[in-house]
Length: 128
Image (cartoon, rainbow, N blue to C red; front, side):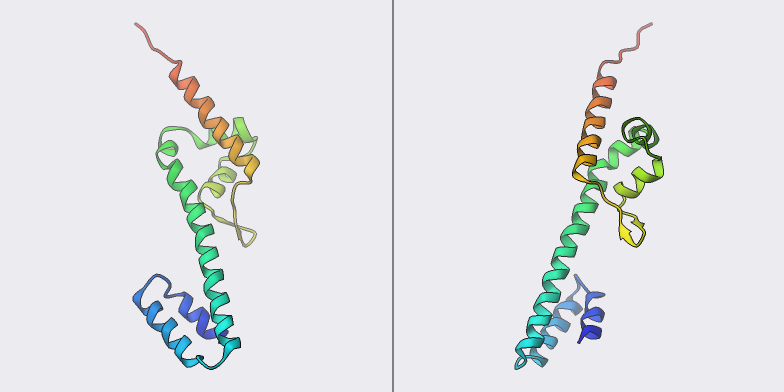
């Protein structure tokens, strides 16, 4: 069954997924253990989707900012890290086999950095 579920997962978000899931439920309609396994698989898939959406959300929220402000500057001045380190977290790149993500403290630091940079930019005025 694991093989079937993993194959089905590759179709997530498509009509083929819905059809395949219904077929699985129908095939195992008299097997409570199998139906529980399918339900647990779907529940885990939904949880993982939420995590991926959360990661994508950080990237989307920062999209315009990353075009305006130097990530290297933020990484160096607010985190004492490299641009790569910051980029890995913003883009949820895989590091040591797991998606890199911000801790709550790091998100607070990032929010502080953005507000601080905003204040600095807002206070600048160029005169002749």
